[in-house]
Image (cartoon, rainbow, N blue to C red; front, top):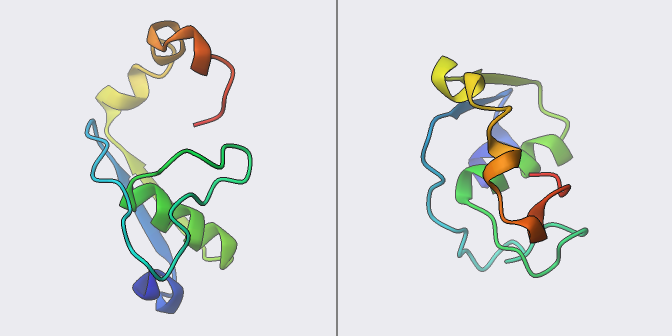
Length: 85
């Protein structure tokens, strides 16, 4: 997270894998105030930290992933429907 804090901008590359959960000790394990028991991936945590720090962002997403965005809500379990990701 320190590299995100020191960066001039944040570049997020979105692909089809989620990644490992954040397990560091310096930052809270559960950073989402709306869902305090949910762990997030390292990439998601970096994005949240960049947002909190007010970093300019460039978000690159694979076209195949972008094209699937309308399908994702319909395949989620009902207990997560309507929650932001």
